[in-house]
Length: 261
Image 1 (cartoon, rainbow, N blue to C red):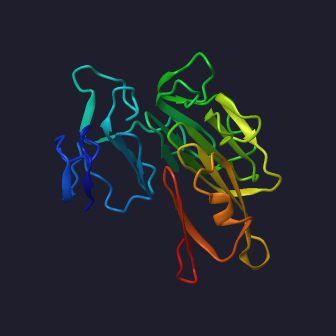
Image 2: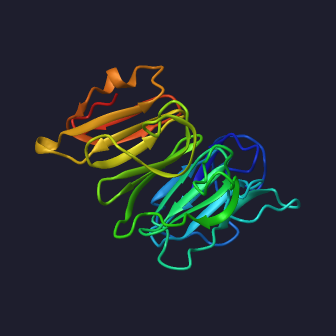
């Protein structure tokens, strides 16, 4: 059973209504959810995504710009229950992320975008600011696979099995690497000088982690705005890293020694 609570003005809690809810309440769905727990629960500006081990994906909340991966409808601009997302024509979804008004879904060999993005958030070129579950052309590069995906408010990072990382969307603060640009309209390689294993996105910054080296040490790169001193706080290396959670403004790092930052 999946529960939700909090802000719900667009139906993003999937409770069949638009009222904010202060206590955990069972979610609803227009079709049965898989019985296995989801591998990802992703929150956008006012929409929520579920991704399951089978590749099945569901969305609830604001669909004004197709961020729930269905064509916008004036009669049903918001989903107040989880709706199934159409599956890809080949393979199945393995990764999901979301920004303020957009969604990104990936199979190992294809990336799909849906929603609205005036700053390149869709990665479909400068002429495309709206799309409904459209595949990015020629990405990832031939012979590579997408292994990690992250989105902030207006930018996205995709990590490949080669250790390369690509980004698109808003890049004014350098969150997509150099050169900084107001809009990166198509996937662009982000060069940090080493192979990347994981990525996370905040509002106007990104955090990249290298593959584990000797002793489990990972290199760290913070790109973009650093108003709250993440570079100084994280340093250039992490030891005994387990997992991290990035919000719009800060980062939580969990170590297997039981400490958090």
